[in-house]
Amino acid sequence: LFKGTENRTAKEIADDIDEVGGQINAYTTKEFTCYYTRTLDTHFDVALDVLADMFFRSKFDDLDIKKERNVILEEINMYEDTPEDLVHDLLQYTVWRDDPLGYSILGTRESIARFDHAYFRNYFRENYYPDKTVLTVVGHFDPDAIIRKIEQYFNGYLNPEEAPAPCCRVDALYHPCVVTKNKEIEQVHLCVGFPSIALGDQRSYDLTTMNTIFGGGMSSRLFQTIREEHGLAYSVYSYPVGFTDTGIFTIYAGLNPTQAEDVLILIFNEIRQFFTDKITEAQLRKTKEQMKSNFLLGMESTNSRMSGLGRSQVLLGRTFTARQIIEKIDAVTLDSLYTLAAHVLQTEQASLSAVGNIGEMDFEEIMKRVRVS
Image (cartoon, rainbow, N blue to C red; front, side, top):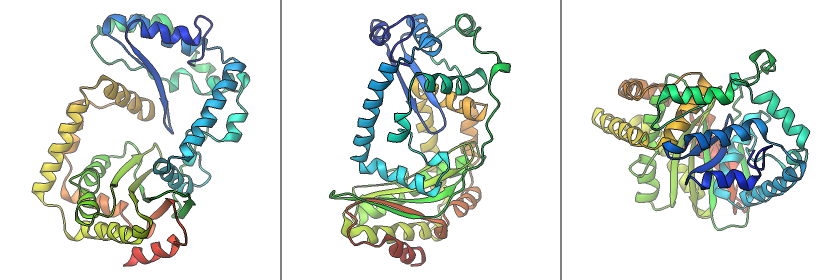
């Protein structure tokens, strides 16, 4: 969409935004794509005109597609050389096997080779229609005036009855696994994964609170034990990811190959200790205050708020106010948090991915030991 429209060349798209000191970009996740601009409020008309032009009148020229195909192939090569990113995708690809949720956002060399004008036109028609499109505006503006301007561009959008029938989606199934990829590098990058809850699950704030305490920052138990106490990893953390039908909770560590088993033992010990050395009410209150502060400070970023609102609306069909989110954080209790933790942190369901100088290490055998040690 950035390569030219019926009205603008690729350079003119960039120039029109640069001239008003704005930004234009896009990003893709596994469940949605976002095209966005950021400008002063006085230049909203320019931003809207450029985005609408790209959205409705992109040419999808075969020559441009061929050029961009080469760029993406180089991006895949670069990604293969970034093991600390590759290890996360390797885990998701394997636990969800042939489900599309496990596919890389970058695509494959085979899929990219099929791209041409007709392919993109067909894809656009099947996926970019009103029921699946959300416009999000964040900043300083008059709502009535903004809506009138948007209607000028989008009133002629494809009628809902012309939209294709929704596809039949089967929920992704989690399969415990151990998967490795050997690379001649200094470190081994590890991910330990557990099946988790879906995006929008009412227990999401219990999960976020648990993660903050367990491995979500420098003060977390995981970081303090593995890096500060034992000095076995430079980077170690945990994070949850939710999708519309499932989720995964992941622990990551980058370490010296000779210390892999020791780190895995400590990770699983920390999981068990999470249930024996329980969080106190004081620790829970402190964590909730931390989360509320992070959330409210994050809302000062128009990009962050735009992305969060758009994601929630397009995937869940709803959004929450700041007050509602604060109330949901406040509603987390020790009982609800530990009920959720017991649901997610089941060691027999643990999966592992490893990328790096694997050598003779048998991670299947190591995982058998640490699961029960």
